[in-house]
Image (cartoon, rainbow, N blue to C red; front, side, top):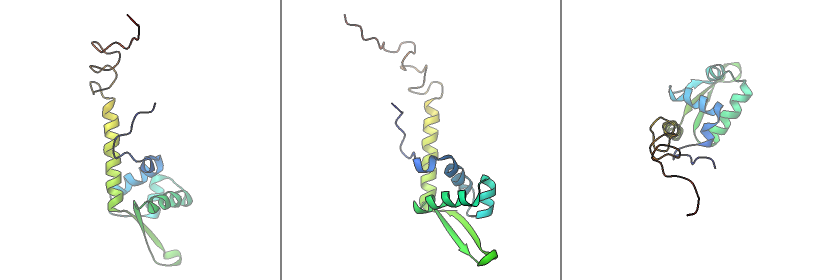
Length: 126
């Protein structure tokens, strides 16, 4: 049985490319499409696809100006996107702390299965 994800965990954000994309956006107010593409080492089409998914979910907004070769696209994280990203990062921290030595439920932690003094899991009948 997979572990229950903590509150705030987002499957949408957790996809590696989208997590990297939102991480870059979280450090700035807005970023040009080309810089984002180069920073993530993605093709135009791959970045466009991921941005479309995030834009549809309301996590990012695209700002377009100019025409033709002078056309610029800037990407910014929406307020909702920032909250969702921050909540996801907090959920990841909870997951990481679960495995920290001595954390409740961590292997070897007091009370964890197999830890000294832990209740026996045998099912023998008396």
